[in-house]
Length: 351
Image (tube, rainbow, N blue to C red; front, top):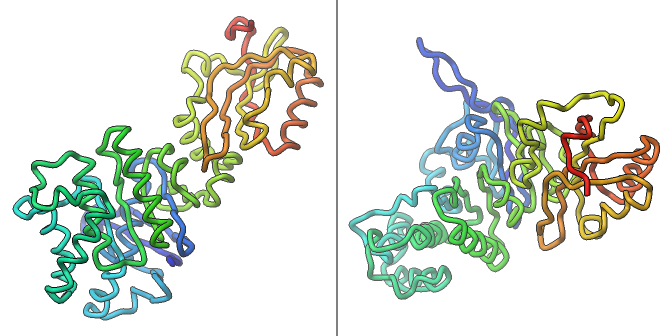
């Protein structure tokens, strides 16, 4: 559905410092998929998303949506092409002087729909997002989650092929976020809609994404299937994002004592990512059977696409060969294990 090739965008110039927002981005979002774009602040996520519908026109590169190269279109043809691309925003962007139904209808009015078709389409969309009883109310009377549902209905009004989501849940509380994510997932499945979303929340990625793109300093540093990214992250930035989401980032006091080499009496620290049977299995007991004392320092087991996903930091005490053998055994079962280093035994509690 979306193919970006060699995308480059530089802001500034003419006496102002030049800032490269996009630096040769190549990206493919398969039809019917939910693709999440993550990265630190200033990575270029918003610039990338706005380039997909040319709200931010790239300096070079091509933007192909649904087989059509948007960068080659005239302004009139681009306006027509944008009707197949919906967009929802972090702060909703609703018109305060229009009712819920009026906000949804606006998208159809601008698209030139006949008046006799607008009413039924608005009613259909409000039913889809669960706001039929709010049709006559104004945005000021709505909760944040309800406003976002109006935004989603408005974006879906002209029957787009692609939905762009710009931090669509970051202004919402956790329960409302879950409801909006459930709605996006249902729309994706029910309508076959391709979704491209940017977020800084790995929990959002874990719950809805099929594919993940990791952006840093305007470049894609890692991308792939969501299960691969979570279980076998390759880049340090990806690992750091995961550590924040899973609670496996080492406390500062413990990280300060970490040594790359083992000293007499030290214990090893490892970070484990695993999906499926390994995640649900007795990892600590496996080390114990190998004669290794294992202590859970941090982490948790969560669901990733409805499959158990474990992200754990373990302290391991025992014979180095036995530890290495059990790590090899877990890796053979599909676990990703990062050896963090060694700390003194008194830095970790063992039962």
